[in-house]
Image (cartoon, rainbow, N blue to C red; front, side):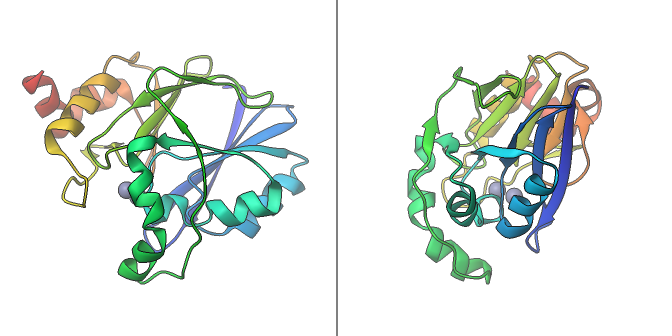
Length: 216
Ligand SMILES: [Zn+2]
Ligand SMILES: [Zn+2]
């Protein structure tokens, strides 16, 4: 891989916030900054990287809690999730209370849609794959050039995201998993929680994926 991917675990939910930059590049993106906006901004600065975008997989607080602060600190635009998560973004203050986290600010992202190509700074292109189910507006981001996909809380190693939160939809998440399984086997899976994996490993071993493929 010719990209560098750093992971900062954020919130009590140990969400994998990632900072991605090209080897020798000047720009970086932060994916799902659930918290620790200051540290994320400093990390980019220390590496001589310009934070050119904040990329969001879905509007749960452990993924977006630090987005407004990080935007304020860096001026970076916020991309994603899909517009169907608008209601969850509006409910950020209520989400913070419900999860016992500190009060977080709402923000105005540039919503993304299925098939859209995001070209941010000097980073390789990211293709949006709309993956509703865990939330209505969930999105995964596929980097064909580098062979990885950011799967948020849709696909985990040997598991998938819960569908019993408000707006969750079991049929939809199975359909979304089926969509992800169209990616090449060698594609690295970078989830919002837990260990990294590959599409091939998940197709072979993940019981939720097996269920999704049976339903298709
Ligand atoms: Zn979530
Ligand atoms: Zn999460």
